[in-house]
Image 1 (cartoon, rainbow, N blue to C red):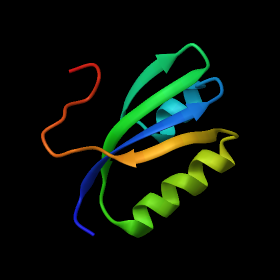
Image 2: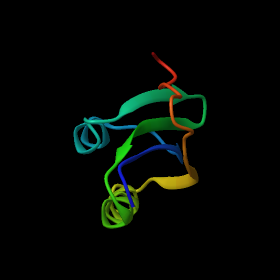
Image 3: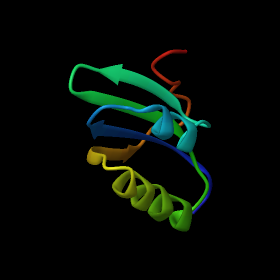
Image 4: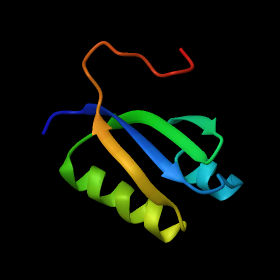
Amino acid sequence: MVATTYEFEVDGWISEQVREAFCDMTIEELPAGARLFGTVIDESHLLGMMAQFRSLGLVVVCAHRVAAGRRSPSS
């Protein structure tokens, strides 16, 4: 797996701890959670991120690769 851009939509409040844990990602607040957008290096990085979401008490509602060339929502 080559570094790929992913978008994660999570349910739950985004605390300062979550912001620090995912400081390399763009975070967009949503009414019922947040969208995180950034680079995933490989499969083990992706699995580690999913575990980190879980350990921080966030429910991942949606996770998917983003088409090449698409920019983050805030760009």
